[in-house]
Length: 157
Image (tube, rainbow, N blue to C red):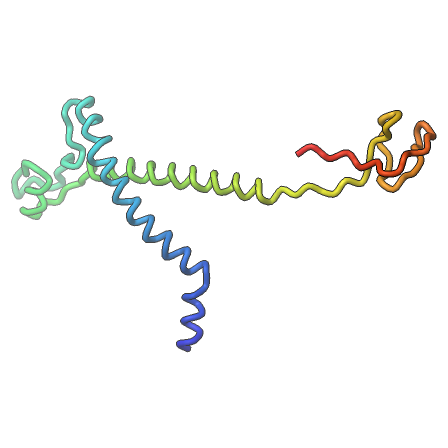
């Protein structure tokens, strides 16, 4: 069993997954910093000096009205923290956009690598410029004997 586990871990796709998870976690911290530190403060300023992380709606005011989200959590007052949700939605959209762009780039690279040029099966007659089979020694269109060594026209890539 230990040998099978080592073989499983040593596979390339498991290592790729591990690297992806680690890089994804680091990237997540960068995006969180971008959303909370760079995007939301100017957006909050434009919308009337609002700090989105502190936006909430009080569900039960019988225990008092909290002055902040932290105060509501400390007093155990049930609230809907829609400001944090708004931040998380923006965070998700940025991550989704970056993942989309990466997948798109990888797909383009793979599609370019997968293009193979088929070997030519025809050549052009040097006299009438008609397309003739590669092994032809006489042009079927103009009936001229072809010189030896006429090579096939290279297909455009």
